[in-house]
Image 1 (spheres, helix red, strand yellow):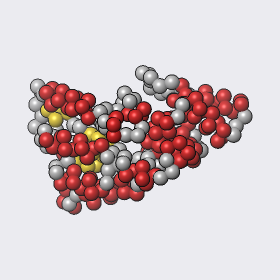
Image 2 (cartoon, one colour; image 1 turned 30 degrees about the vertical axis):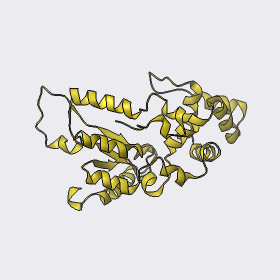
Image 3 (cartoon, helix red, strand yellow; image 1 turned 45 degrees about the vertical axis):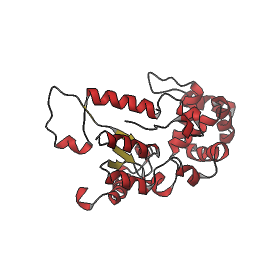
Image 4 (cartoon, helix red, strand yellow; image 1 turned 120 degrees about the vertical axis):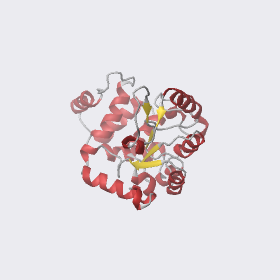
Length: 240
């Protein structure tokens, strides 16, 4: 389940790429060679038709978020005769809107977390007692092996889950990262023409949500239906 795979020299936000959840191209190739050696790599479509053998381990390679990085990755897979599954969010690729989760990541990459906490409290305009309550609520990670500092956990949780989180995220993104959201998307998300090229070369694409937000906050059936309708445009009707 891959996400960002990009060399540091190809980004203006090096501190974000240096987080251990992201990879460089060479790191990805190293992992890919390991997977090829130790697993039988299959496509998503193979799941229902392959004749599985008990003495083999299988792997499916998926790539989330419709990132520009994945256009180059699809060529690397093609050279090795591997089919990857690329999960495309609708609004970032079609409408050039930055996903809320990505906005938060880039906000964190350009600002000190402690200063961000102060900015968020300033936007919320709460009493000291209310600030303490919010801190206690949002600074706790749900992950057992969390390696983020408390401030980073707080910023991420409150911007994702507070009722005013999206509004504050948009303000911080414009203030700290860029006011040109569409221009930002041109260097970060795939273009539709690139998605079509990937499909034509044998890669698979699937939905990553219409808005790519927490499904518990959405009409899930509607979001999935809209996402599927968008993905259909990249396939012949008889392949869906």
